[in-house]
Image (tube, rainbow, N blue to C red):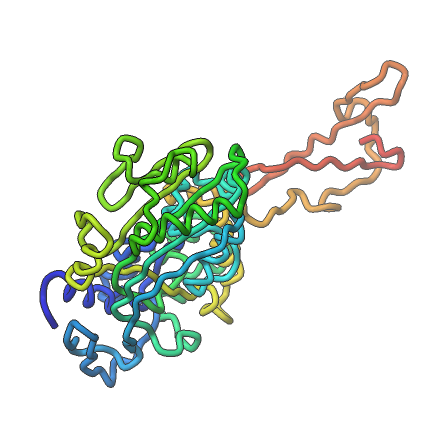
Length: 397
């Protein structure tokens, strides 16, 4: 294995397989969960270490002592274009690329399209449509063979709270994440995306046409978009004007009239002046460009408390509270229990009711409503709702 640059990335990717990952984070190797690294166990799943062998990675040589459960496939260079989609369909499309079900936005989706509000509902309400055009250079794919048969380590299984305990649930998610990494694609990607807000009235067909034209110009040079007159296309697509474009490292953004165009690279040398120059640098500076996952909860069958953990993770992925506040968020999101339970207090007739309970007189000529002042304990749980029940034969207490 060649040390430095690509060689280091390859070894990091091999070590990342089987680790936990928080799907609300951008898909980068540095965000892998270390799990129980202090105990020498940073993988969440059990891999076959009895038949470790030498794994050959195309273009990077061989890696020693790799589990027989880990395989490597040669990658390819591709270009793919999405259609112009609404927020939920694009989110679902991104999830499908990572073997994730549903349409809850991932951290990678939010990072790609520049969403920073942290609120799925807010972002979806403000966006009219989204589109993507990308050039992908996949050097190789490392993945766990047959991930559906994986088994979590005993340490992880024993860490699942058997009851609704917000502190322990938050600690589990913070330590292990929400998913297990089962595959990583390594190489480079050059992406241009468009985000159209509700304030823009540009037709969908025109938006798609401008996006694809810009992609052709950036990736093949076949369309001289920058030489056209400004009134021929929305100003946001003029990414060649340095005065109008906000650039940072491998990321640039241009916004105008409700349309935002983002160009971003991952892997390769971001200082390259053109796409063709950048392509040459990808093998020297590769990066992880796509991840595949399996939910932790799908591997927790027959584990006490797995349903509660699944509910907590679902709430966390949907509303994305900060990890430092997750415990308090779960405090107010757990299964609701009324105290006291219906019929828990004896009804019966109360002697001298007028003096036994305080009363509310809502109408001068109307009946009085007596209030039962028997104390109720909630076992230190937060009060999130109030339910009223009328007792007695006259239903006035």
